[in-house]
Image (cartoon, rainbow, N blue to C red):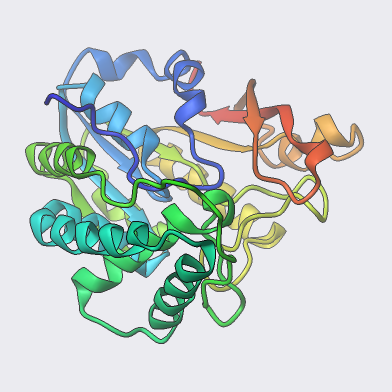
Length: 298
C-alpha cells in the first residue's frame, strides 16, 4: 500500500502515540505461530491497524465496539469505501467553498442535526460521523445521555474531511485480513477465541478526577462496577488460555491511596507506560501521564 493504513478518526484515548511502548509488551508467543487477534473495544483502531500490518501471521481478526455508528463506519470502509469517498468529497467541497466561519458553522450544525435525528442511509450516516469528527471542536467524539452528538463547531481553517488515500488503504487492509466486525457488548468476544489467541482491551478509562472523564462514546457510563465486570471477563479469558493485555488509567499515580486497579488485578502483571493527554477540560491537566498496562503473561 502506498499509504499506510491508520485510524480514519481522531478518537479520545486513541493509542497511536503509544504503539511503540505497547509493542514492547506483546506476548512473544504470537510471533511464533498463527494466532487470532481480538479487540473488544476497537475505538479509533490504532492498535488494530498496527497489529494487522506488523503480524502477517494473524489468521483471524475480530473487532467490536458498543458504538453502533462507529462500527457501521468500519463496515462501510471495508465493504463500500468508494461510495463513502464520493460522499465525503462532496461534503468537503461544499464545506471549504464557504470562506467564512459563519457559513461553515451553519453546515456543521445542519450535519449534526441530521446525524442526531438519524437521517440518511448507511453511507450518509458514516460520512456524517467522519465529517463531524474532522470539523468539530478538538476532534472529540462525545454523546450525551440521550445518545446525541453534542460537540460544538471547531474553527479549523482547512480540515481534511475526505482522505481518500487513507480510506482506501484502510479498506485494503480490512479486506486482506478478512477482519470480522461486530457491534455490541464486549463479552460476546469470548465466542471468537480460536486456538492461540491474543486479546487487547482498551475500555473507557476510569476517570482520574471529575474533569478528566471522556468516557461517553456511547449512551451510559462505564463505572466501577463495569470495571469489575471487565476484570471478571479477563479472568475468563485466562481460563480459556488466552493471552490478554488491558490499558487503563493509572489512578494511584494521581492519588496514592487509590489502589482500585492494583487490588482488582492483584493476580496479574501491571506495567506503566507514559502517554500524553491532549483532551482535557482543564488545560493544566494535559501533558505527560502514566497509564496502566495489565497483562496475564510475563
